[in-house]
Each structure stands twice: as C-alpha cells, then as structure tokens.
Image 1 (cartoon, rainbow, N blue to C red):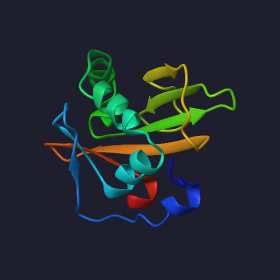
Image 2 (cartoon, one colour):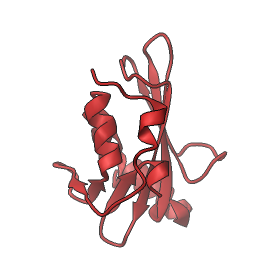
Image 3 (tube, rainbow, N blue to C red):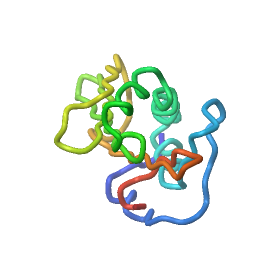
Length: 131
C-alpha cells in the first residue's frame, strides 16, 4: 500500500487531465482521485461511487432536489474496526441521500471527501483541493 495522507492530497489543485470509468462511461475522474485509488488501493471507491451515479436511488433523490443533478458530495469514513460508510449528500450538513455500509476496508484514511460535478455530459469526481 502507498503512503496516502491528507497532506499529500493537497498537491492536487486541478488540471484538465481526466480518466474515464470503465463501466459507467458518464463518470470521469481527476488525477487526485486516481492518486487516492492508487495509493490507497481503493479503485473500489471510484467503482462504488460510479455504481450509484445514475442508479434508481440516485435518480429519485435528484428528482426531489435539483442540486444533486448538478453537484453532490461523497464522504467515506472508516473506523478503527476496519468498517466504513460511504455517503452522498446534496450539501452538508443535510442528511445523506445514499448510504452504503462497508463491512471491511483497509483504506488508510479515516475520512475522505470526493465531490461530483456534472458538466452536462459527464460526472467529474474530484478532490476538494481540485475545485
């Protein structure tokens, strides 16, 4: 496993390079998110987010709150017991519209935020520092 820390995520401040998700072709992600996946051995995290975007639960929430269809915020929180929870919110501190409990993860950070913005064609996943 790499050396993923909150501090080394600050090096990502945004650029034009993008990577396309192989299954949900409407999802692209930045070098910062790719770095999280590589250094944290967490491509599963990108997969989890991509699997929710466009799902029935996602579309239902977006039909009730227009903000979700433009931008929303994902958070992965882990515990010392190696369990985790992935949530998506229209904005903080609102209740999540998606909650996925993760039985086991060795993700190295206790918390990470990944933002998702829609450009009219693609959902871009990016780190807050890349905004």
